[in-house]
Length: 192
Image 1: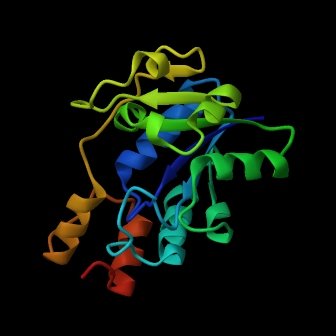
Image 2: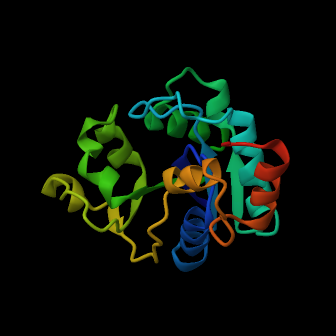
């Protein structure tokens, strides 16, 4: 089975994430896409993060009706901050017959050479890159690597930061969030 891994804090998961994950699962050679809920990104402060179990539950609610998508909390049980290579290694050991591919935005590709053991990722895993307008150019050695593939996925210029600001201000997030996610946020009074 070919599994694409879309890492993120999903704080909260929004329709941009869902459209991207679904596109990758249905328009590439992947069989499925797993959303990897990261407890802490080593490049971002954790102070603005909602509790990891709330973020996991929102992802579960958002993808419940889509058999092409899955979610994993694998990084919850790993040392923090978690590094992509460690997660990939752990998943490969746990699922030795699966082929994993990393899904990342073009903005991350530009700084990929700063990631822990990025060469090992390129040696063993396919990297599917979706466009991010205005991203810095990645070094040619990385962008032209045979395991790196640019996928022309549709993008919406929506950010979780924007959504959190709307929620804090009491503004509507209709159509920005899946309805079950919006209901969960409202019921638990999150991001207020």
